[in-house]
Length: 233
Image (cartoon, helix red, strand yellow):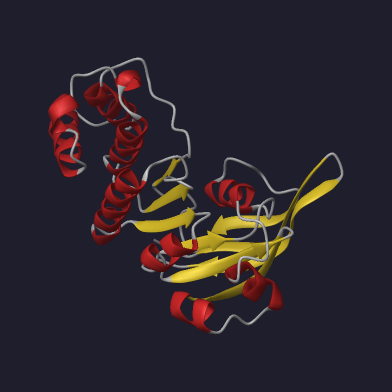
């Protein structure tokens, strides 16, 4: 993965600034967690990084030769196709140009990896919320993305499902995929993050290694957020 560069990126809707002149460079390897209070602009910033939104001003680009990177995104409430769990994965692989044999093998492999082999032929839309989120991760992982964007993937899950999802995210990262995620949970940020991007009021207030961020935040806003004095998102 070549560095993802944000250069003075801003995003506004109807005159309201949501992201305000954010500049940073995100590299391969480390798991990057975007934290911030409610309404900080975390999800919008992630969508700008992914390319789902275009900045009002500034630029978002992959540095180096070739601008297109293999990337995928999993949302807080994933959309399931009206197909089986297996077909939700093979359909995406078909669109990506994989052969029939490759699609079947890869889909079965990732379903096994996320613990859903037993529901491979069940309709995806009748699965539990936790199972659907696992399937969404499997569907993205099957594509072999260089970068996987996760927008609060465990926000609506119970503690057990959250632990399962976190374990899967760890395995995806270990397979070589760069993880960029938002979360409302400080505990999850500690467990899954290597670096923190702290966003408040649409601004990138602070960037630090996860341990340093929690032990010695450099900004008053980050310190207040860690103490629970700013609203969670």
